[in-house]
Image (tube, rainbow, N blue to C red; front, side):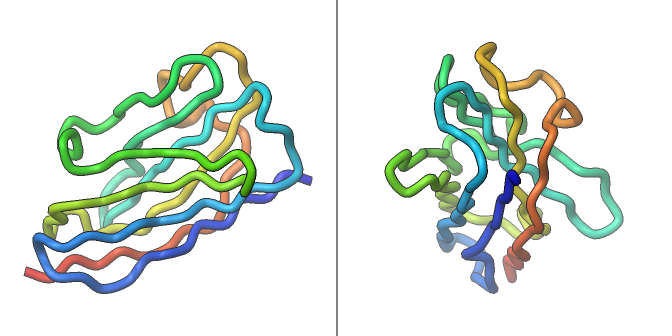
Length: 125
């Protein structure tokens, strides 16, 4: 059974940093894409970043370029989202999602097959 668990959210002041973790289980890290997706109150779900076994990382949101990075630790079956220079508009529930693929990160977030519960990030001004 595929399971994804996001953690590491919290309250941070604008300009601060957080690192989110996505602990994954139930699948092999041979052909995969794992993405971070966020949903702010009253807004649609938005892709943030993705990492895959075939083409590295891919940004979905231009607004986080230069501030957020994604990495993976295969030995720990964990994907991380490092968020720096946080802004109030980054406030959202952040979730991780997975799809079995050898073709790199999906173009659309709705191509992910498995979703984990999210972790809330609140950035105060």
